[in-house]
Length: 73
Image (cartoon, rainbow, N blue to C red):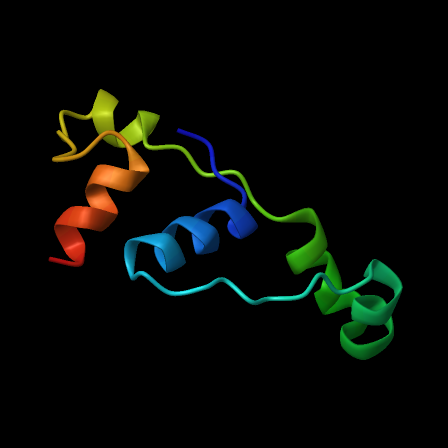
């Protein structure tokens, strides 16, 4: 399941029964403050478990929400 960072943090907050209170920061402010490093935040990165699965790894949870519930019990 693909998840943007905001979605992931929202689900973590929900699993912890806490509000998610991270304001959106405009791109130009991140660029001003962080310079080139802002590209890491703004462009993100795509990761996939496909290579792990192909090599024989089996995930205990294939969906984010059940994994969070299991971790936070």
